[in-house]
Length: 77
Ligand SMILES: [Zn+2]
Image 1 (tube, rainbow, N blue to C red):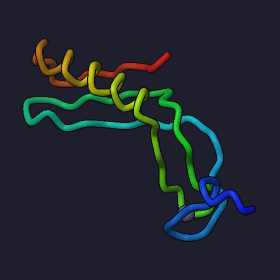
Image 2: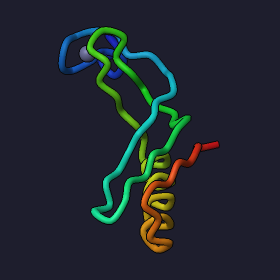
Image 3: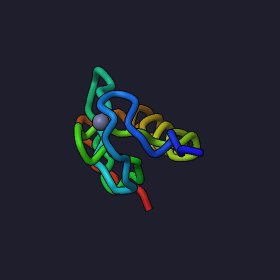
């Protein structure tokens, strides 16, 4: 039984757990979120985040939009 969830669908490389930095453009500003837990392909660098992490990111982005900041840098804990 092979575990395909650990294989990158793009290049066939091996996925590993790691941290990444993501950014979102709000139009009026930019949010940068550091320390985001992600699964990253060790070969091509493609990144995946899980649903719980995606929801947290959404909260951070919405908060920045409400406050109308031009640049927000946050770190996910
Ligand atoms: Zn890959």
